[in-house]
Amino acid sequence: MNPTFQTVGIVGAGAMGRGIAQMAAQAGSTVFLFDLQPGAADAARQSLADTWQKLVDKNKLEATQRAALMERLRVVGDLASLAPCDLVVEAIVERIDVKQKLFGELESLLADSAVLATNTSSLSVTAIGASLKRPGRLAGFHFFNPVPLMRVVEVIAGLKTESVVCQQLTAYAREFGHTPVSAQDTPGFIVNHAGRGYGTEALRVAGERVADFATIDRILKDQMGFRLGPFELMDLTALDVSHPVMESIYRQYYDEPRYRPSVITAQRLAGGVVGKKVGDGFYAYENGVAKVPPEPPVPDVSSTPPVWVSPKAARRAEIYQLLKNLGASIETAQMPSANALILVAPLGLDVTTLAAVERLDPTRTVGIDMMLEDAATKRRVLATNPATRPDMRDAAHALFARDGKAVSVVKDSGGFVTQRVVATIVNIAADMCQQGICSPKDLEIAVTLGLGYPMGPLAMGDKVGPTNVLEILFNMGTVYGDPRYRPSPWLRRRGALGLSLMHEEA
Image (tube, rainbow, N blue to C red; front, side, top):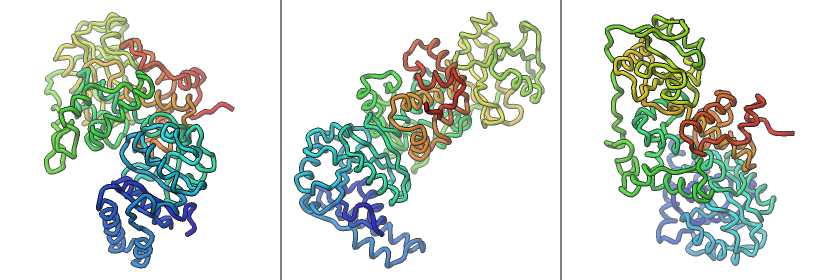
């Protein structure tokens, strides 16, 4: 092996530093591991020794290879021992003053040609290197935990970073077997920035008491294919990690409404209800397993009223076919009869607004989310309005569950659950492209690998249809009057012209 960097220093022997050290050694570099805490670097080396031994036991690594890796991984007792390094990566506390002090000391020890890299997840690379004599030698090199499994790394150029430094780090990441993506030095870079929509919008849905945490998680997993619901994900990452990132990005963007955090997570963090690691989060945990409340049963309804569908309903023809398949009695007159269940299917609007605008009887009106084809989802979502009668709610629930498909009934919301969360994700991603934070291609790669989404956010927008996403956002803006939902120019122009959200100007 002939790695880009022959000798690499890692400062910080926690989970991130240990993971980076493992990959650097496996890439063929000699690795010097340093941590201020006594014994931490030795413990990290022993942990990696155990990891490599397990690979030997599973016949995934030769014993001679393990011995060579152990020879290349060396613990040092002071920063001065890092002087021979071609590259030093810090993975220490997320405090800009501490990182600045460290890099100032490293710069005085290393050769002028050495590269300095910060694994910061949310601090400005430019600000970290501002006091250096050679700020051009510093770049962001942001890995995700666990480093050996999360095979994406963000390479971030500060304002003064030399292009050759980013080229070297990009090549080195590939030698790790990772996929490097290039990002501009903006709050949250790519992955943490793009991830703002999922959790924060789900928290707004919960804050409006549209549905409980478990129902929101079920809906987003079953309708859009997310592997973890937002509250499952926040419990896994823990609020002492995720909430400060929410606040940091929001404040660094001067209180941009699109990134607004939630009082729900602030309160839970203050109370120590941070997630799975303490056994108490959005879910309670017993022996590490979440205690998920059961779904409400399908109502037992003796008879189902005829169904009338609003002429303005999204996918109206598909709704008619679905109702026919379910054996419903369908009304096709211009207005519903006095006994009919009234069905609306808004994009971005709430059921209340449609009932008022279309002069429908709100006591009999129920909404259904038809943003996606029914066949493409594992769950149907219905929404009542404040006046909906319980018998009409139950009749709609029972009807749409007739074929065994899961049904969730939520309270009124502009955009139900999936519409508003997906539209927020897509809008933030589109604006990242508008700002030139990264290329559309790198955005899609970073999000799918770094966040585990079923597809990239731009592909998600193309699946829903940019025009439909625009309609959802415009209508949510009408319902809530919140600039959070204003469409990005990137999205608005491509939606207006019928272009893919991946389209870049010539």
